[in-house]
Image (cartoon, rainbow, N blue to C red):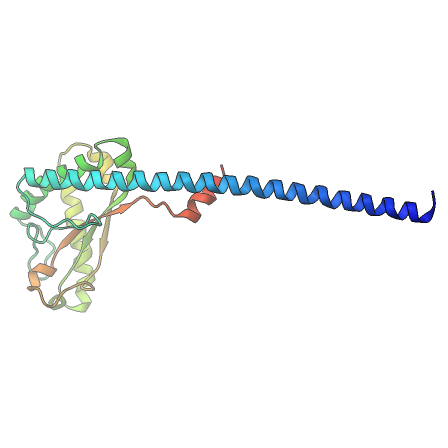
Length: 215
């Protein structure tokens, strides 16, 4: 075999090798693309189901509140203001008799709405009990008061009998905002409040894809 023939054969071998690697890479790219499409489709389905579960929870709460005669505002995020039924005196975290009766009506409604089925229960990571204060309660004491107000509500729940109590308490997360969100246009007592706010399950695409890769 002369030198030119050996050179041509070497070029053919090297070209054939590179073509094989290119085919392999193209095949792998197609596989990854298909996996990504499937994962995104599943994520979209989960997000739609999540939205449906949240609507079910909110609708159930609204229905329950109407049934027990509580007129409260629920926004699209699932935040319920307890200002009208649970007010605090200036500088105090004590819940009065009216507030206790309000909570006795309210909490069973929330518990039933969250735990009406396994999907709605899984949708709620936490039910945040968020204490607030007014500017007039001073910057130094506002945060402390907010914490104590949230804790006072939590203590009432611990002593109150209602369905799904153990599971409900596991989702409770006390929090405080101090006077950060106090509205000067409102009467001071309207800012001395506690909010119930849902922290729903997250379906972040990057997080979901990372979990899929680790399966």
